[in-house]
Image (cartoon, rainbow, N blue to C red; front, side):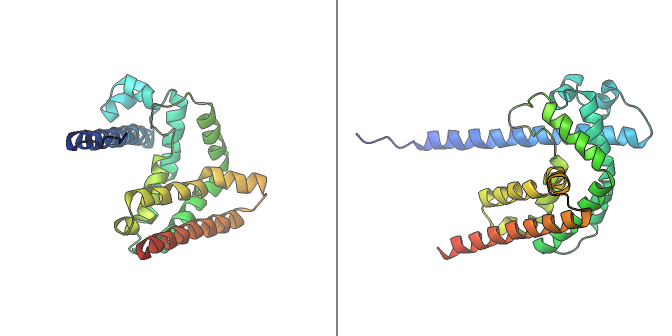
Length: 221
């Protein structure tokens, strides 16, 4: 018995549903970022903001803040890390190269300068992430700034890759660029900061080259 192929209306409905789902994920990501950015702004002014202050500054409800950050401690920590990473944003803004390899080098250098100076904060951040209640569906526990930086680094490749290939590249790079790998290499491998940076950069460039090779192989196929 032949299976029935979905009709045009069914295919259209499926595509619409998928697009709406991605739109909701993107909206949740934007909301989370708005909350963190609002908290950072209040902290930068020397304030000790409450949830009400943060909700008002982000133009969201108290409930929305708690959906994304079950505890004020978690939110304040994310915002503090964000303030420390302002230097990373400033560094990336100076880059004019469209070469993904060069962009990755700049990103790894900038991040590792920050991490080396704030390792205790990184340990606390990971502890809070592990012990935090489960987030909403499809909502990352943290790391939206890191993903944004990685997407910036490999952004020039977006037009030459399929969306799936690009997303996979960003995901694999997120494994080796960030607090988790920094702490593993520092604690488990007992590497000094300079060596941690070198291993991270080599790993990131190897993943990038592997993705590019796979993309070229697909084109030849």
